[in-house]
Image (cartoon, rainbow, N blue to C red; front, side, top):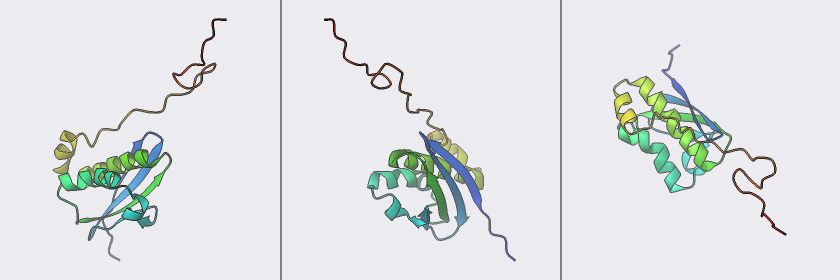
Length: 131
């Protein structure tokens, strides 16, 4: 039995989590068992996800299988981008400085701020009435 090489990594953004597996192949991308174009219909999301592959010149060299959960489309896009970047850094150490320079290995720490009691939202307050 021939063991296939698999590089796995996890990416997070806002409340989204992406588990990514890079397998050497012809370049197919599947997200939650769906095609890449079907899962991410917006062109800007697809460009963001493919950015680490374009920077490292590995666009047609890996099959990507990803499981994405939680959050919205932008959070899932960021999580998937980070997961792919981390997996590329694992498979070839020469990719790491290129990805680091483009700040693709840095997790975005911004999260949704919680809603405070006695207020309409995180920062917005109810209208104040003097009389």
